[in-house]
Length: 204
Image 1: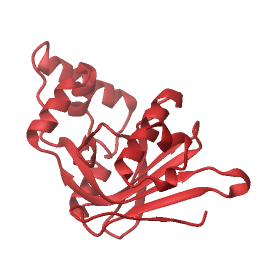
Image 2: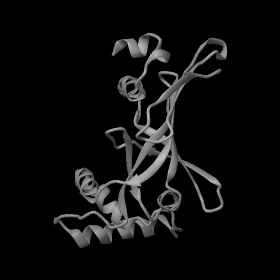
Image 3: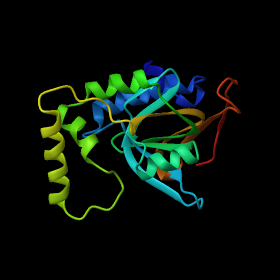
């Protein structure tokens, strides 16, 4: 595994092994949220949107995150189920770009992850009308208090509008900073998730 990170990573044949190697290093060196990634979608007019979200796990080859399906990103993903992800690990001077089709996780998987979240986060998922106009901070705090009172000390079920999305990559690009902007770039491509990968180096 060490060869993937300190040697010539451009010779690695498995993009997921390479990603995992870099990710493990990022978890040791990034001061905050090594699993933070930029998620890019497009709206009904084809205008791109990007925002930071957290990678909540990998399921096989898929990259999984969770959100409110009624949010801006949720509605855009449901209407146009394709996305791009970007990991930027400044401490390592590396980034990984990922592109692929998007699908929903199973209800069982979403239920299990929701149950693992802190109680206040579960209440917040019920209280927040994500991406919609908010009249004041007080209105949000009131909504949280109302939901907390509603559930009391009982079980907090997963909201029907809250679930996970999985990105199934057909494109992964690895970038490592080099002196004088002579960076190393390697891209893996495939035409579909059941097809073999092709690999090539790119000019920086």
